[in-house]
Amino acid sequence: MKAKIATFAVMLAFWVVLSGMFDAFHLTLGVVCCLLLAHFSHDLLFYGEDKRGWGRNLVGFIAYLPWLFYQIIIANLQVAYVVLHPRMLELIDPHVIRFKTKLKRPISKVTFAQSITLTPGTITVSIHDDEFSVYALTRSASDSLPGEMEARVARALEPDL
Amino acid sequence: MTILSILTMILVLAGLFFFLAGTVGILRLPDFYSRLHAAGKCDSLAAVLMIAGLAIYNLDPFSFGSLLVSAKLMLIAGFVFVTSPTATHAITEAALVLGVKPWQRKGRKRP
Image (cartoon, rainbow over all chains, first blue to last red; front, side, top):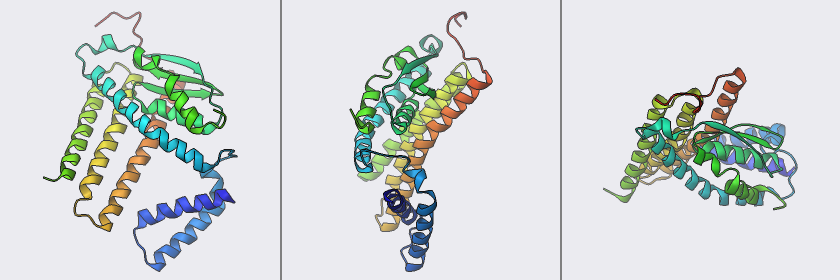
């Protein structure tokens, strides 16, 4: 039931932003559509059981975002430096690294994998259970993994840490 | 020249720089996988920077309508941020499954 209400709220906010019409007709249409959506697909957006509650998840995730943006900008500058360097082929060293993660919940694994892929120089190739395969462009890009990023994702989304 | 337009210029120029770096990377890097680094990443940051710049520029004669349009632009930026790494990851795994050989540094003479 909570999942349905939350889905309804998110969908209605999305509808209002996209439509931009505030007369009774359009709002009623939106409410009807969002009710149908919340009824039939409430298990898609808020998936599975959750001990911590979405409020704390959301707060932890928002607190994690600024650090992620900072990392993305730093890593982008590094990749731009490598790419624009005259002797680029001596700087790059593509390789795959594998490591085990401590993260347990699917949502935190996905967040971690997306964060790795978003920071340039590293791409998550696959996740099998708790083993990540990461394709890195340079040695220095893969040195920092899993490291601080995993710790921060764990702090943001894992229940027991 | 308001503060908003200066901020817009900084954001759009930074976005252009990262797009340029991404394009140069696609042309210069040696193989499929390393090109994905340049294509998928520099682009995600560059696109978000440019869209943020446009959203701020759009706010200038401030009204409710322009706020709504800026909110839509930021929604686009958010979706690019979520979908771009997903697509990069899917393409990389597909290439690995199909057996595209990665460029290796060892066992190759230096150019």
